[in-house]
Amino acid sequence: MNRLTVISSDGHAAARMPDYRPYMEPGYRDAFDDFVKVYEKHGVNATDPKALLNRLDREMYDEWAEKAAAPGKLDGYWNPERRLELLDQEGIAGEIIFQDVVTPFVLSTPSNASQDAIAPPSDDQLAAGRRAYNRWIADFASTAPGRWRPLLAVSFEDVDAAIKEIRWASEHGFAGVTLPVVPDTARIYQAKYDPVYSALEEYGLPLNAHTAISNSTPTYTGAPSRASAAAMIGNDMMVRAHQLLPQFIFGGVLARHPGLKLVLTEMQSDWVVGSLTKMEHSFHHSALTRDIRDITPLSPREYWQRQCYLGSSLFSRAEIGARDTIGVDKMMLGMDVPHHEGSWWHGTEFYLRATLGAERVTEDEAKTMLSRTAAGVFGFDLDKLARVAERIGPATDQILTPPADLSGATTDSVHRGDLHRPLASAAH
Image (tube, rainbow, N blue to C red):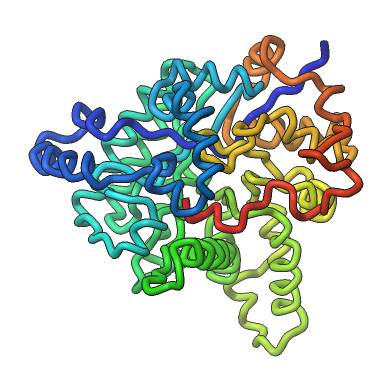
């Protein structure tokens, strides 16, 4: 049987909070022990009831509790053996793993924190928590060499410390670095961050921006309801995430660092077309003075083609339909395990049929979006993963055949932009 190799460009893993202790540097353990006591009473991660009940109707949450939490499927969040079982069931051969929004010394998700005004930890505690997470995820990924490539969690504010951590990551099998939120008084294009970008070039590690991790979270206290706050947060965070691409281009980062790869994940895909069109107009036809070319000698579209990619998780049928305009070779499809909005929740095979199959994607296009580009960007061994796919991968003919029914509707009656496109997903 001809099977597809699936590399998910977007997955998340996190330890149970007390399990970070062995990875915590001794000088922070007493403070971490105190934090764990508070976390066990008030903490919440992206799959916890307190987080999900903010944005799911009760019947949807009850289904989640019954079919995901009760059978232990969420144990794959922290247990590598259980996660492999889930990935095998879903036909996912390889996976990029991001931190989740809750790491050591972080009490809550952005959505909860922004609505409840939870005090943030100190910068030193955040840095120590990220280092503990990085050591933990390195051990997690080592249990299945070649199937997982983690991304480093690091702050850029202490440049020397960031470069040291990036060097460590390059020696321990990390696929890249997650772009952190920079302070409100700073911008990612400022020259003080250039040594970090140079280190990423030197070690060949892509920089990965992920919604809710790489951009600040707005505050909507006093909203009419928690649901309305979550909706506004989700919309606002997506807008802020989309602003990163112009900053990297017109801020000159990609021009100064031609070997840097930038990946934009869980930001949807189709917005790029309009964003590049606007940037191209500004560059070529607007009233901007010509000295913009001193900062960006090439056009925005040329930087996009040379250095940028999309981690297209939560992809809709409409995005797959627009693949030629967006760029088939730019879209790396992500399944977002173990989040509620991920493809795995209602079945990755159905999800792929309802998007790739419904849009008559060719086998060559499917291979590009599902594995080839991700292997090239993140350094997966495709031959090794193909052997995994022979055992667990989805059948090519099955995936590329449109389903006769999409949740009770024919493929023709499903609105092309509605399928699997939750607006507030970024709020987690």
